[in-house]
Amino acid sequence: METEPGVLVHSRRSREVGAATWLMLAARDAQEAQREWDLYGVALLRCGTLFSAVRIPAEIIHAVAGTADRIAVASYLANALDGGPCFFDSNGQAYYALTPHSTAHRWNVPDTECLGADYFLGVPATTISDPDPRCAVWWVVPMDGPAALCDPGIVRWLAERGRMWRSEAAAQEAGEDA
Image (tube, rainbow, N blue to C red):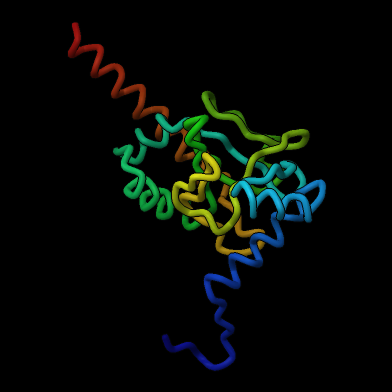
């Protein structure tokens, strides 16, 4: 890979470490959170200071992606979110898009929720990008570095489009059943 003189290139691993260090700033106790990541693959981090997290039900994401296939959804979201970070919770069947902390103040998309101040969220270790036996969460679109978050407008578009397509599919299915 050639770069122009004076252009700094960071490896995926260094961006991952930078993202992890940045996320740890949202922990009550960074050492404890790191220990939880190491042991359990997930740690509770406070929303509303560094980031907010938009929770979108899996059925909405699957409707907009046109599939529930894990790899295809990951590819779709990486593209649609323009590389913005998103993880999946298999227990809650929801996707979480990390957005700037101010997103929660103006979020109002039905069937979704934006977790801001006063919420703690189980966030996967930055190294977990596939299902892991230690935890039920993994990065679908890993963070690309410190403070690299999703554009709230893109997340809103994605959620609204998924809701619309889910409704259309349900209406079509109801028509076929009649």
